[in-house]
Amino acid sequence: MSKQILTAEHAAELAVRIQAAGPFETAKMRSAREDRNSARVDGGREEEPAIPPAAWGLAAFAEGAVKKAGARWAAANPQLVWDDLLQVGRMGAAAAALTFNPSKGAFVAYAKNDINGAIRSYASEMHENVCIPADLVSSTQRGSDAQKAAAGAWSNTASLDTDDAESVPLRERIGAPEPTLSIEEKQAIRATVKTLSQVSQRVLALVIDADMTSAAAAKVLLTSEQAVRANLKRALAALAPLLKELLG
Image (cartoon, rainbow, N blue to C red):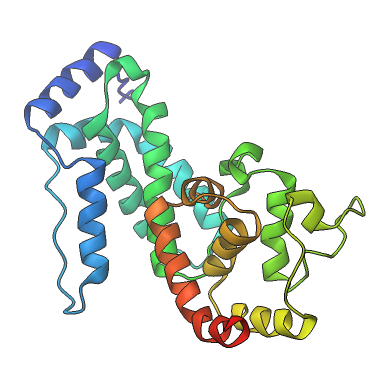
């Protein structure tokens, strides 16, 4: 049997049927639901809205993209389970179908971001240290060279005053102000930072060292702005006692 091709007419027909089954949860509503679920301590979770059959029908045409995305993530992260990656990727394709408009172009190309986003969220939730496939991170998404260098500074417990590959101090490259803490105080802070998760360390590097907004840091880390804010809040809470002692 030959592979079924998704024509523009068929995609438009499915899009109309999908929207007729709505309205669906908006991005703002979904973010609020995820916030409530994260804050719950009783183990209960609000269920995600049901996806209509027409959306699954459209999502099925992105199966090739789901498998390719799953293969890239599995290659970069052997600890991830292949079947789970496929299931999560299909959910991402279905989520893309809910907001697809034929005027936005081909569905498969439109769905790739949601597919990879769903897999990334699943991987980050299941494992603390997750490697993002190199081909999914462009130079613009990673930010400037100075910001990348600043991100590495935290993980390597290096100083912003350390010269980079071009013998220029990172502090000068990112325009950071001169330090007001002693070397011993900075070492104490970095020792505490090293006890945090790698994700929290990267968030601190981008938001604090590189002075990026949560939205910009989210693009660099290929995660949601909500996740960046949550990690930053946890990291600052862990650092609060030490900073209070040092800074009064």
